[in-house]
Image 1 (cartoon, one colour):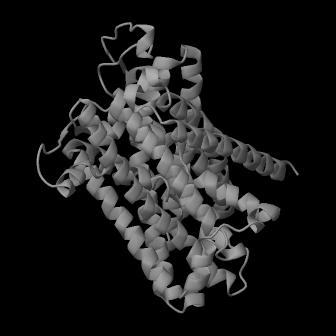
Image 2 (image 1 turned 45 degrees about the horizontal axis):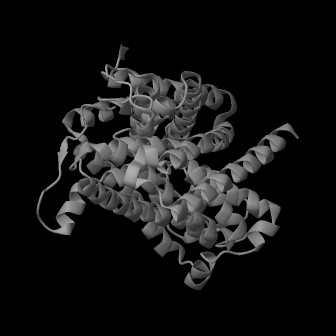
Image 3 (image 1 turned 90 degrees about the horizontal axis):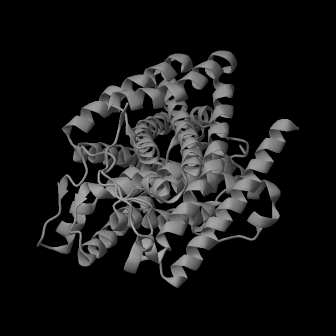
Length: 454
């Protein structure tokens, strides 16, 4: 473990930061990808495209599947509007995260360290590490369940096998950042193709699907529906993605001028928006398939991934339905582990000003997730892993506001952002979203903890 020497200098108060960091986190890929000085808009956009898809992975990880399945099986297509709203919130927050990284040269973790006291920064770091461990826990369990469903690998062995993907991550990191982006996009495409086929097989009522994207007042009036709706929001917007995005946008060699930064913000926002609409399709597809296959057949209590897998084939009349479901789950789980580890590296380096070797950081993150998964799987089996999935989403919900509020605060500060500070309308919108997220997640925690205690 070595400190990062940033040769920091004290800045005057009008600069808005306590100190300036010279060296970026993930220095091996920092500004490693060239941006063409001339050429078409499409050529320039493609040079910036990639980070958005790494971010989108967190919005379709196995932790989302249980809430989408429960929402679709219980209430049909009604909660599609909640998935749409969650995705729009995600688009806003990721755009702010990308802008923070481009304008200030800091990721969100570095920005927190350069603004808050050491005690506050350490507190934020601990909570963020818990959130990353919780997210990784969901991905470990999701991958283990997929291996069990597809190949009959016992859950306990599947959990242990997930540690081996560290070799894949290290190999790709050594080859270059584009290789990581290419693998992530390939796996996202696999998930999307699987669920497109699932939708065709399930033959949903498309009139009802369109109607489901229109907000319904019943969501607020029905306590059970509201609870699942908040769960969808909590499982969709991932706090570690904000740290991740604000760092990986700095892999591009954009001009450090006002014009260059404006161009980078524009293309980066387009990249993450397109990628997150793909995530919207996948999350919506999970709920649509659940509504078409389970709700319409009277199976209104499907919340566990294993139950969904076993019921899809007989209900849709094709063994391919279950196989594709398992393949999509495996691809989603593997994809999420890639970005979760990078987020862990960024958070540790940004908050603590230290750097660990990539293999060691990966091993620590994996062990924190695997140890509780192994213990619960050995004791309680498949039902215990389902409960662990729920717990992981609760922990993520608890952390979310501690990432969103600093992000909105920093990007709205003219001392820190200069001419790039959020406009008044964007400040109002961003703070409204931050307050809503905080209120809804407090309610979700209250309901979840109250359910466990009763």
